[in-house]
Length: 328
Ligand code: AFP
Image (cartoon, rainbow, N blue to C red; front, side, top):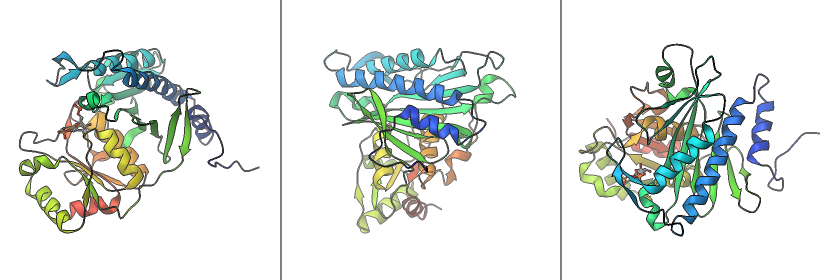
């Protein structure tokens, strides 16, 4: 009998991953092993986020990370949770975090380290004090055989084997792609499982909404200023949370376009290619949208460094087109 997915079925993240694997005859189950560790880590982080005020772990650590950014206490906690949950998975060769200057080289290829997992442990953490949605973003790359392991990790986003994020919002939502569409799961706190709620998400078109930090308008280039001027004349609406996971999640479900362009003080943009732009670009494209940086497909960018920053325009194809129409 043909198996059909309906809203009435109760499918956990775990069983959905196993079912996906059956569609790939050569699959070894190793990727599932990694995704289950990510799911465990994000449940633990979500729990910390929800109890942060009670447990008095809100606020800044009092120091900056190696990129000179103010670290929140929860940035450090989330980072440690991910390292603890993923560190003992035998097929992970490298773990790289936005919070650490150098990646953790865990296992050589000979020792079974086939994958690199890159993550932003707590994106949007400067919003934590006001209980705004924050998230964890992750990207999984298969490590090539050539060059050093660090070099093997510097691959374009098109080579990601999985990407996703978890949004700690009014519900805890996990969005995942393994290159075969985008599925969405919600954490059912009562059973401790991420449960499938939507399969093969597609970004809706015709939503004239942009998401940008408009306070920087005079620091953007002429192209972005022209787009904003045009949008003001053309019945656009605006939504900006300032937490990429939450802004992108809204666009995934409702459509529109997210922009973090270069500014005078951040000429290369703010967002990180390997930890933020690539995984989000894979999700957006798998849901039928587009993701570009300086008019170039983000997933085709050859990374020059692990912490490289890029400008980002992503969203439904029609709305990204509307932005690019103002770019020379
Ligand atoms: P924080 O993690 O420091 O809060 O930064 C969040 C972020 O990296 C991304 O999630 C947002 O889209 C972007 O920065 C917001 O930046 P602005 O505050 O400059 O708009």
